[in-house]
Length: 226
Image: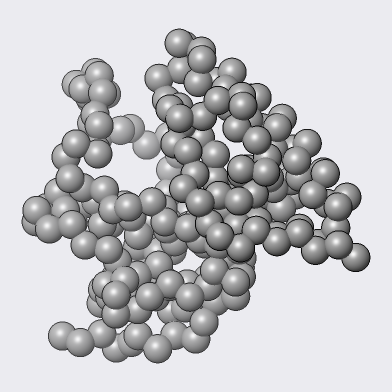
């Protein structure tokens, strides 16, 4: 068995620094990739170059207003990426059944014609840095918690990082809405209802993320201090 090891992490190029000349060897070095066999390395290399070509085509197309880049997932196969999805849409029906008063035909409470043509929230100081959920299907917690972070910043002017791990560990999913809870998925409604019932959510620095390996922890953050 051949072990390929890239021990030193480099500085990956950002989207505007990418070119077709960016080699797989550079990618493996920049993201400290380890491959157990030469065959795996070859398959990952082919996948990476296909993705890089697609990224370059996208970024060169003026029809797109957003750009694509590379990250530690660029050499992952589709089934590996699916395992990180923390929302099972086939289970969302349980949420609707649990709340029969919810109506999909309800009229909106806002006038969409009054919306601005664009908003760049990065310029408004209400976004925390990009995070990495690791091997845990916790996107439902990250998306919901970061929405709370931004809403709090809009309301108070204070941008704080809140704890996704607290949600993973302490918010139950008894009806299996969008998943089975923890690293196996849930919904934004579960997050918001759960945080309300738990009287709030701690900061990231007091309850840090620890589920990057793929397993949630044990709830140890309740009751919250008044």
